[in-house]
Image (cartoon, rainbow, N blue to C red; front, side):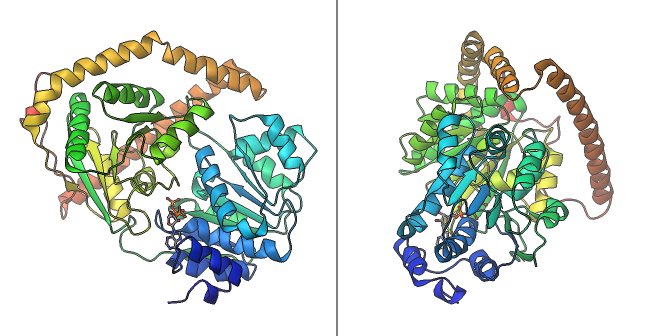
Length: 479
Ligand SMILES: Nc1ncnc2c1ncn2[C@@H]1O[C@H](COP(=O)(O)OP(=O)(O)OP(=O)(O)O)[C@@H](O)[C@H]1O
């Protein structure tokens, strides 16, 4: 197997890799580094935790060392936390160069950022919204001469999810030179491949890991079929069991909304679990602090929304629990990819209600693997059921008293005003969009169900074998 030197990297970079204990390049690094060094655009699609970041950081640093200037490289990424993580890799690997980097993300002081940008850092790592704001409001810096444009989690940057980057990306793409190298990476590139190919036209090199399953082999993937109302009791039980059985442990629990995230965190703390929340309604400083405490194992449970589902590299995470079944297979792939990274073992447990079974089937179809059922001692869940329900209700009341929803609305309006938008107009536009999305989703679900019915008429599906609605389950007790 080729080492880092054989890929064409200079000895100082090989030495940096050695110091960081990166002994052998991973397959995505072996595939992409030579192509990037040759000057080609690159689309790299490899499983979560497979070393995609170093696959672009190393060749960029090599090219930077040959012709150092600022701003040499722009990296775009969908979340603020991820921007800091990528910057750290640049900093550590680029230490001998005296690399100057600059992180441009929302929630931080704009004036300080503008000053840093004007000092011509070698590498700028940014979330699209804030960088576009700077481009629109300032002429003290330019990205007209960058050599490299990297889009990490490229499919997320291009898709129109709840945070839509389209307009900001247009601003940014209008400000970068046409003659550049474009590098696009993600564990789930294929869905947006056509759009991505439009961005990378300079002898594009496409690298995709060939594997029968789209998730990591070392990942044990399970599901627990639970009635909606008793999910929390199962969650408490799962965490308690894990805590009892392991000395050194860290768990990430994913939820679908900021409010659910906050309530769950409060509830777990009431049960004396060391939990901390991470969601987009928190102030940026609180977000960083929460993540830092989780990374250093001061808190062993991170309750997060999908703001943490992509890219975050925390080696100590042994378990990912999906408190809700992700609506899209690719969200599942990224969430469970927070564990079992860089060859380590990990476990993913998805709580599935009777309404989510079609989602599990869609996930299984995409990842090309069936989830196994996790055996849970239901008698033990039953024992804590009432207590968990009461505590959860208490937490909800407390959160309502703290006017969580109201604060969220005020924050949103403030943000829109800052962006120069009319909050009421935006609300109407969003409602329209939501309606359209709902119609599309219903149509898709219906299509999925028809397909499943057709399939079931044939060979029959081997996914989660749900108990039928009428079948007794101890957990359907006095919730
Ligand atoms: N050649 C290597 N040998 C050993 N470990 C490596 C190597 N390259 C990277 N790593 C480590 O693997 C871990 C995962 O890398 P990275 O965060 O780049 O994954 P990724 O492919 O970007 O994952 P995701 O899709 O979740 O963003 C990091 O801790 C990194 O230091």
